[in-house]
Image 1 (cartoon, rainbow, N blue to C red):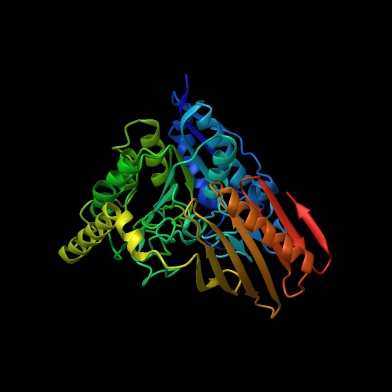
Image 2: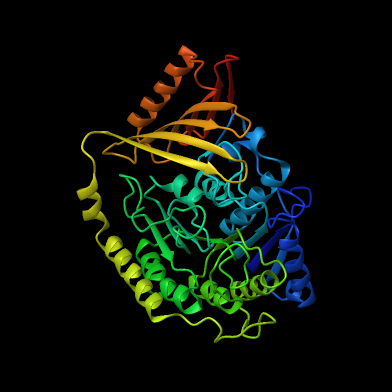
Length: 450
């Protein structure tokens, strides 16, 4: 019989941005103590597993790490991602019904190109897990519901052109909080229009507001999309006591959200109220995921009437939900209406790495195709805080790429590799159909294949 819930704890004792940084090991230690004291790990159907490690190939399946994977990841990053993979594989084998990877470092701000750490993230734990399941376990349709207070811009970037991955992010409005993105107008690339849905919420949104979005938008969309796998990118910094944001969610609200959502897998993201929130929020979530009563879980200062939702906020949230429901309902017509002429779309953006002070200037060419989602060509230029610079060229082939797109992208990579242009530090081919990941370094005339 499958266990109801599998847990992995990984506090990452040997990894920290700084000794006093909010993203530190105590985030999980208080939770571990709380679950132990409450006897949760002794409940029938709740099983704790040991942490596992991902491979460099698992990382390269998702990211272009500049210049190499080993330059951007430490052992802690590989264990955080590997633990998520282990729970995903255990779920796919039917050994657990749900899994919760209580791990750090977090990952949802890590984009496809990685020049360094941003938003406390180097690599994207959820995406690495999902791509492993898609490649080796036959999972295709995936829904990611990101409930971190910050917009999951990295996860969005990774899946912006993938129509088989639905990404929904509930977050504090980017006009008031890092990373500044996540507007309702960010709806997916030309081949996946409408499969990215962002819900920017006003500061001070409480349980009522967030749960309204889940019930009136998220659940109906999931019901229609019919994913094989539902992943909760489980940030806990929407809590009313979190020092890095300005929302009013409670432990009861988080538990009810997971009871409604019924995610197959959860992966921990943010949450920095180390003593006042995390032990209670995680306890409530674990009980909800395992099907146990969570009604008595309360923060010491819990007051259900302390954070009322204003009528203006209520009206605004309902208008956002209505807007996105209309987008989802009419996504095919809107995609056709917004589809660009020609077979190439160019996108430009600047990405700031707040943790390390890196400025990335990125130009993306989306090669469109009538038979598949097409492929992407990314020219990324990083300016580092010490004044050094690195520029890379990357080709990304999705797992659904048709034979023509596969041949074209591989030929382009081979053409640039033969020319050995020294303008680029590295040239990459992310060949998901073949599950081969090429890294070419022109200055050394060296190719690494993972």
